Image (cartoon, rainbow, N blue to C red):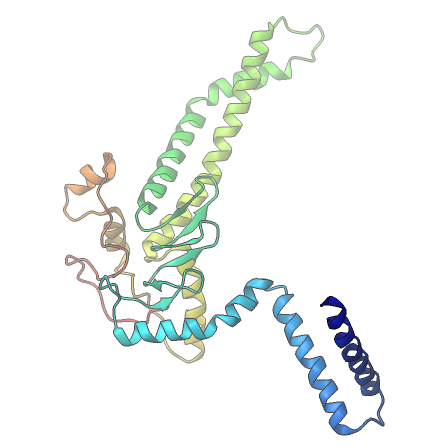
Length: 296
């Protein structure tokens, strides 16, 4: 069987090579030249789908499944809502599932995350709708703890650092091995706490700014592009999820009444965030809310 295939493919390959060779010459017939050009163009298109810098084989798979994405997207839009009465905005091209507003696909976790902010490599988990408040609380209180340790151990750090500077004096100081290890450990711990306080403090301040604006890290980039696009058209962009600085913090922290600042913010609390992460209607106590342009 293989011998028969080789007998059939051999002449076909020879004819194809002859056509390609004739295609290089200008005296070949226009029809033959057009066939050769179409063959080369199709070959380049096929290679560009399989080998490029935008995703490799994933790009070819996305292109092949694009009609399916279009069909599912339009069916969902015609139906209005899904089976669970979930308001959908688009279809995730990775999960092939309805994607609510503020939902994004994490390529590391390989799933869609509600109100995704970012994937934290230190926690090995995504920061989203249900754990964003815990992440911010962790960063905030960890920063306060590092600042407290750095400030409280400043005198110990100065004494340990001054002792280390005398190690190479003549005559050398009479420090025991345990005292030398203690001096170096104090200096190392102070620098470690101070570095973490600066790095984690900057991250905490950045997330505080985003929370005050009513947006996540991903939405910040999306809203920036949308703001520039509307600005070029002479229109003003307004974030649909921005209720004002104070109300944004109340929604984020889950503060419904005045006593919640104590029971839900200063004290440990396991209360759920506002909403289910699928529909984003403002809380009833939010008054300053107007219709605006939304970037999806």
